[in-house]
Length: 144
Image (cartoon, rainbow, N blue to C red; front, side, top):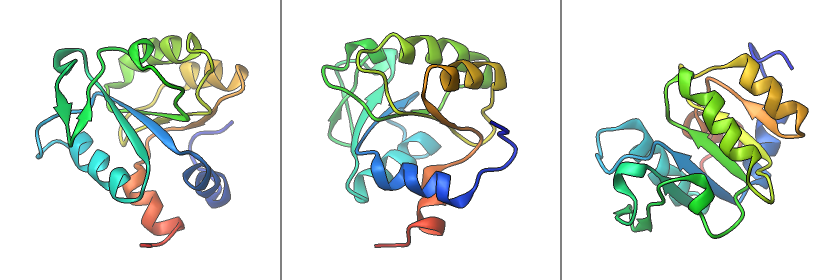
C-alpha cells in the first residue's frame, strides 16, 4: 500500500471497528502527545492499554501500564505507536508475535517505516502511518 495518502473510508473503517488500543510509548506526562491521545481515545469509548517499560505496573489515566505488548493479558485490535521511526520495526516484530495478532498498526505523526509497514501488511494487518487518531476521528467520524 502507498502510505503517502489514505482513502477516508479506510481510516474511518479502522476507527469504527477497533475497540481495544495499545498505546506504545504512553506517557504519564499530560503535556506529551501520547497522554492527550490516550485521553481522547478513552473519551470516545475505546479500551486503551498503555505500554511503556519505564512505567510498567503504574497507571496512566487510570489504566495499568504494561512493559511490553507481550505482557498485555488480552487481545488488542490496534497498536498506536508513539515511538520514533527507528523503533517501528521492533514494534512490528512484537505485534506479529502476539496471538491473536492485532488488526491494525497505527503510527503517529512523523513516525514512518515503510519496510516495517510492508511486513505487517504481508501478515494481514492494516497499517496507517504518520497520522493521529485524535485528528482523524473528529474529521471522519464526528464529535459524538
